[in-house]
Image (cartoon, one colour):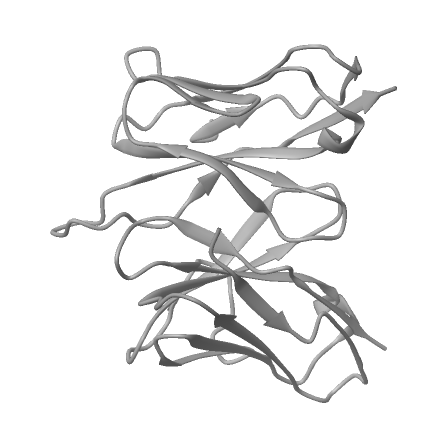
Length: 115
Length: 116
């Protein structure tokens, strides 16, 4: 199947700093990418939907100024967690929808720990 | 009521058993149905997808959709210990005014353990 790469897979940052997570579709173009957060033993919680070249659409309760999403090309979307706090520690997962179809593929996820 | 209901289990079966995983949904606009497998601390892996009612088979996996009952299933034949994971059903409706589909709505996930 298609490959979606996330980087970094694990990151530790200090409180108050910002951290950027990249999501790349390696072998297909993705007009739409999605960012999720997952807590232990829970399902995925959609944070926002990003469309290439336009502003992201955030789900209710997700702070757009804290979780900055940029989708500058058809193969790359980034999530920046700004002024990170320990409660932002979580597993963040991106997914990408093929431009030529509807199939959605997920990245491997990124573990963020804020200390 | 959640839009998609999935029994979280856990489900434990012996190796070689047939596993049946199920989801029900309430939104009749859902037309695109998927099953993902997620191993611990990894991203979900797409197993199967289908648009229509009926059965779709791929190796040991069969996806079944009954739109009239708003019920989907995933069957795993000859289950293996390597199938131990969380299985997530997901579905989406057409985005308004377009031919593409919108965001995915997930079930809670069923934790499956296949023991030797």
